[in-house]
Image 1 (cartoon, helix red, strand yellow):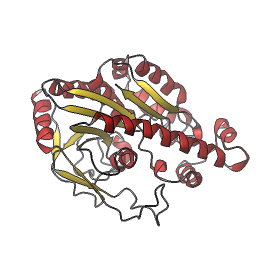
Image 2 (cartoon, rainbow, N blue to C red):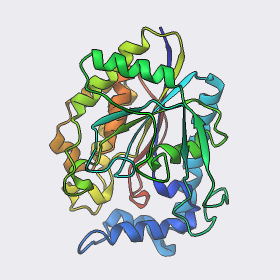
Image 3 (tube, helix red, strand yellow):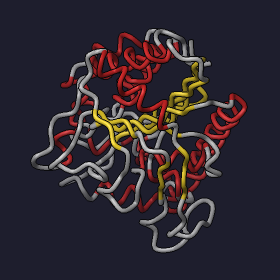
Length: 323
């Protein structure tokens, strides 16, 4: 039986940038929303310096939380790291968009800073910097075979050729905090979390129930193995610009806090009951990545390292460990 470590974190693009750049992130996202008005909570947080002091504090909290996760992960020395994130029309386009897809190649590359005009990231790394990760290809192929035989029509890919930047941001962004040295064997799982909102021709996202069932199927496979496996859920939770309940002006912190308590108290299986309508209304599309991880971990209580619910964060961010 495999030994399993669970980790949850965010992949928000703003985590790569110094806090003084976060005001531009908020500006760009709010400009997507017609007739956008700042909610009262956000106005209060921004204060008289447009959020500068608030952003600096939260930047430190995010860095500190990632450090806790990194220390745990590397001390644990996994043989494989299943990294669960969503591909947002990066590698998988509408002509071929699987609901779930495991990467089964032997290595994978990522260029997390390609979109920057200069080295304006936390580490002052050049935009063209390339990161190459070894992947447990034989383990991945065996996992794909197992879940297919268990009833999942799982897709797989031995290379990423649809997008010239390799790993999508949901996978490469947290790796900049967790394993920038490319020491860990990474097994990416891609999930169609954004669904129809990616554009015309894109299929709906999977249900929470199906995501949880996939997690249970992965667990069945792991229970036949002897490796040490880390499973990482990569996503923020509710996003203000996706939250229909509040006219896409603020994220649903109340909904997320309720879910956080269930995870903290070892009742994660209840989250498989969340309806597609609730996911849509609360802007929690990417929470599906966490629900797959919950399926793997079962009703094991999580240790919450930190949870950032400030509206200035754009999305609800949680850092967790299942020891």
